[in-house]
Every structure is written in structure tokens, then in C-alpha cells.
Length: 526
Length: 41
Image (tube, rainbow over all chains, first blue to last red; front, top):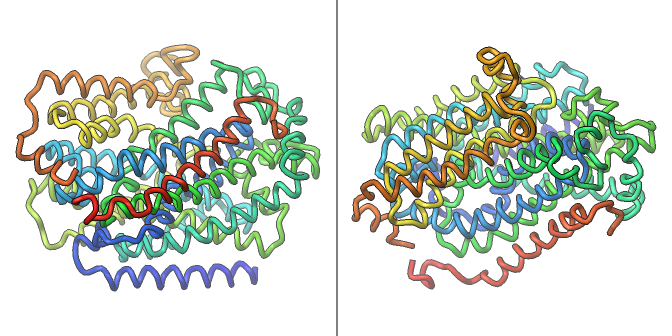
């Protein structure tokens, strides 16, 4: 308890100080929303990584890799190549230039101004405001599960307490406060995750021995997973089996592709002064992702070896099926008490750096995208930062409600749900907005609506994971899904994203283009 | 294959490091490119 109190106090004092520093240096709306567009590349790389990689990756996806093994290493590949390189080079550079040219302060505002559409901005803001709290809740559940295991307190108490701590410091700082604190938090995450990775491989007998020991555990995999296509912790699932569709389309592609449509990440490119800062921040962000997700997924898989060597059982048995508890239990059982306290601080860092950006994005969605553009029809008001803070408070309450009603083993699922929904809804309009001058306002509206509603329809009536939980399909058709294998296992994004792309192209070819001066203005720095 | 059972897992594991190294090299090569003055921005 001494270590816990000491580490937590030191961490919170530094975090609050950095947040206060951000607050003191926030004087304009541009400061509050975009940190004055003058962010250092190391700050950008680390804060982007720390926002992207949250407790959801460490606890949620770490638990998933404990169940499905090293197949999740492909998610790390996608996180680096799509989540960093393509996001920065293909999307980031033009997002920065176009954001500056259009004077956009939020991701929905960038889309809205590019297509001259208040509807695009308002609807995009509404999608963020309603659905992002599911992801925010997933991040908070990650640390709450650890506190539940470590301090032996009820999950709901841990969840409420941590939500209040996060809320207290997020509301005031603006994006500068968020950036300062997320760099500090990112450094903690890298150091502690590297230590966990080294210790785990050492305890499992070295790199090759650890992988061989994991391979030998294949016969212990639960029978229901074997029947569904699980072929071992160091082997990909049987091609086209239910487990294969789930791991590939939901866990790997859902998050790996959906990251491009994340509003809280895309806004970061608008905070940079020039393309040089983007080029320079790529190595820092890539190494950060490698050392956090790469290690989390490898450690998740190797917990099977450690648990079996010590208890002759797999961790999935030890946690009675709740995979969100595997990493917390592993750290709690096999590490010295001072390190467990330090790991809790790491999870605080991971949760706070992601949550602060999420709440900031939620706040600006309400104030800038919905209130100012959709309701006031573009009239600026002096109280915009106050409305943003009202938006943050609203989203904190919706996060509280959602987090307490979600079931167990939900962190990775809820994360994939939001990433997949954003991917299908935003990516076509975003990509064509940056690269195709002939994309039209009608096409952007049609593509965004199509991506969103096809995703929602697929979730409610086809993708069994969600359709079973919502129960609407059973209510209308007396069945959990309208289609059998493989359709009931294919992630909504895999269906909705291609449709959304096709709709954008077809509608653009038959409708009136955006005014020439708007297009010229948008592309003037490109 | 580093103790892995499957060529796909081995490939994914190796690509993890390759992709990170690629990003680092890209950043170093382009370290001085893209400043406001140089690209006429």
C-alpha cells in the first residue's frame, strides 16, 4: 500500500502540474482546440501513440491474445503500418494543410468545410458524441478491472473513482494540457511495458523456448475453441473458421483499419506547424506502438506458459472466462508489490492519455460541430469553451452509464465496435476529401450515412456478437442473426466500408461538384 | 521459425519489427524535408 500511495501521488502531482501548465498557456480558442498549431515532433509522436494505445490495448487486447495467441501480432503490424505510417504520410500531411487552409478545429469541421456542408459536420459530430463513450468506457473498464483485482474493491467503485479523477483534470487544460500530460504518460508506458516484456520472456525461458513452450500447450485449449477453428497459440486459426473470421475481421482489421477514421487522432495532425514535424514524429510513434502493443500482445499470449508452469492451468480458467482480468491477474500474481503499484500507475497513464483526448473530442463535438454549426448555423459565440466543458461533463455521465451496463470480456469488443463504426462512416469521405477535387457534397453525405447505417444494420441483424446482445433481431425474427456462417462472424466494417466507398464514387459522378473557389481554397497549400 | 508453429505467425512477428524499422528509416531520411520554407508551404 505504501508503494501504491507514493507512486500514485507522485504521478498525480506531475500530471496535475502539466495540465495546469497547459491551462496557463491556453489563451485562445486555437490554443484550446489545437494547441496553437505549434507542437513539437517528439510531443506529437508520443502523445499520438499514447492516445492510440490505451488500457484497451494492454488489458483488453492483451487478454484477447491470451485466448487466441500470437495471431494478434498482425494487429501490431497494422497498428504501425496503417495506424502510424499511412495515417501520418497519406492522411496526416494533407489533413494538416487542408485543416489550416479551411481553418478547421475539429475532424467533423474539416469534413464539413471541405464539402461545404453543415449536415456533414453536425452528423459526424453526433456520431462521435453518441458512440465514442462506448470506447471511452472500454478504456476505463481496463484500469477498473486491474484495480478490482489488485485492491480487491468492487468493479463499480473502481470505475466511478477513476472516472472522477480523469474528469477533474481533463475539463480545464484544453489540448495543450492533454498533450503535455500524454507525453509524460507515454514515457511511463514505454518503460514499464518494456520491463514487463523482458521479465515475461525471461520467466518463460527466453524467446525461442517461450514460443516452443507455448506451442506445447495446444492440447490444453478448450474444446469449444478447437471446434471453432483454434489451432494453437502459435498458429493462425483454421482458414475461414469462425475463430479465423473473428480474429481477422474484428480484432485485426476492425481496429487496424478503423484507426484512420478516429477523430481524436486525426485532429493531432492539425496541431503541427509543417510536414517536417510529421516526418520527424513518425519514428517516435512507431517505436512507441511497437513497445506497447507489440509487448502487450506477446505477454498476453505468454501468460499461458507462466500460468501453466506455476498452476498447471491456463489463465482463461483462472479468471473464469473473463479475459479482461487475465493481464491484471498475471501482474498481480507474478510481480513484486512495488512493480504492481507501478503497473497501476502505467495503466493510469494509458487510461488518462486516451480518455483526455476522447473527452476533449467529445466536448468539441458538442460545442463546435453540433452547437455552433448545426444549431446556431455557423454563428460564433464567445462561450465556446464553456459549451465544450458542458460537452465533456455530458460525455462523462454517458461514459459512466455505459461502463456500468456493459458485460464482462468487453474491452476489446467495445473498442473494435467504435473503430469499425468510424472506419466505415468516415474513411471514404475523408480520403476523397484530401485527394479528389471532384468529390461532391451529396456524395459525402450519402457515403457517411451509408457507412453508418449499413454498419448499424449489420450489427443489429447479422453480426452475432452485437445482434445477440441488442436482441432486436430476436424480437423481430426469433433468431439471433439473419444469416449463418460466415456472415454472422464478419465484422460490419468489412461489409460497410466497400459499400461506402462505392456510394461516394457513384454519387460524385452524377451530382454537382463543390464550388470551385472552395475546392481551390481547400487545396491551396497542397 | 523462432519456436512458432505456423509460417503466418512467424511472418507477423518478423513484420512487426520490420514495419517499425521502416518507419524509423523513413523518419530519418525525411528528417529535414517538409519544412514550411522548403516545400513552399
